[in-house]
Length: 471
Image (cartoon, rainbow, N blue to C red; front, side):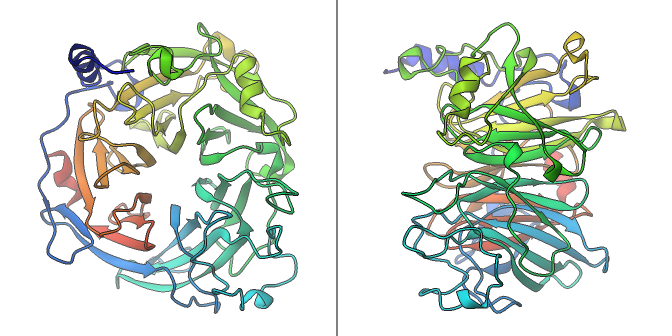
């Protein structure tokens, strides 16, 4: 379909309209984009940043880690934890999005010569040709005072397409496989699961998939610390938004119930805002700022050997989200609960991205929750790639803004989204590969923003006068 100039302007402007401040968590829906932020980058620099901000390289793909393995390629989602043994240090749990066809960045070397060093049972799976999958997780110890890498080592390996994930309140990282390949043609074991990796791990751990959390194109995870409920996104054009009710909060390996979100007054909703002849509900079907009451649908056969979990959920009434990706939990001002924020990378009229908020109900996951249900709100829709281009990973900043990592079609930016709905530029990738930003997360003291440039594989630490971003 070709958009007329009038239609383009109508819906492009709609994504920038200001709505009255009715939203929880400070976000009042959409305001006009902020004025351009001046970003400064010297010749040869990796990043352009606002005046007063600096960056340093934490590590690069390919070097030898403390355990003797090579640092894997394609760093992606991350979370940062305090180091209980040293207040000057923090711990990054870092995903590596190596897919079945990724041909570089193996921790075992070009010819897998280091694979025999791996302990028995520590490799989750091999490909049909018996070569190892090498997606997984590394643990990075960083000295915040000295501004340097202390050590890093392998924690999880043999998985596939470990894209994002999420931190748990009890000190572990949930690493999500986005690649749900299956035997016998593409793997020797099923993939598309979540794996828990403790931030305290001192080496490679046995890989145990949390199968009750479903098999699909997993992207990100966020946990409400008040309830222990786990929320999950799916990076698929027909993906759902899920929650997992654990049998025992904090002990995910004990199992639980997987459910999918349904919009109460719009069963089997399609939320993309795409025109109907592109498979969407129609241009601007959901105005930015609009909220919906939700229900949750129980899912069965969640290991889905046929790869049909989302299709079955949608047919039963679950809402469809166009490429759900980054997600994070944010505590509301005053400490009265919190909200789940998540991105849909190619949602929206301009296919440039949507940002959603889910506000849990007061009896979330309990009997009677339908009397005061959770609320789903579209808080931002990009009016075009120049403003925000395909938001991917997401982090809630200590001061309440959202930091959005772009995985777009041109120059790659880190953008900020304020509670009043203003977008601003924070960083631009100057590396000639122009690869995506991913894994944004803050140090425990809020003074350092860590982020990855996926190719050629660089982890960075950014410091500066954070208080000036909202001035």
